[in-house]
Image (spheres, rainbow, N blue to C red):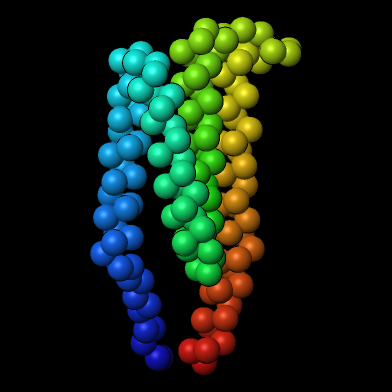
Length: 136
């Protein structure tokens, strides 16, 4: 049986530094949320989400990376909305039925989950089949 060749994924140092900086932005946003520092928390949404979108754009040609990076961008969007809902007190305000303001964060959370589900159930399945054909 043929041994599978492992694919390497590498990124330039400047992109890796940006991804590391992205983590710093994200931590500042979430620390601000935890400490109820509204202005800083809301301000940090902009660089955190902007870098997430840029990272997703930069990986647009690598389907697995794009799917995961889009899911992260939607996660940050949901997380940011939830933070704002708590900062301004509409997190527990009834929206409809038994749903309250913070539950609206489920929309971007679910979009991210659907992107990943599509990748793993459809795209990844195709990729695995193509790998099987190549190695035969």
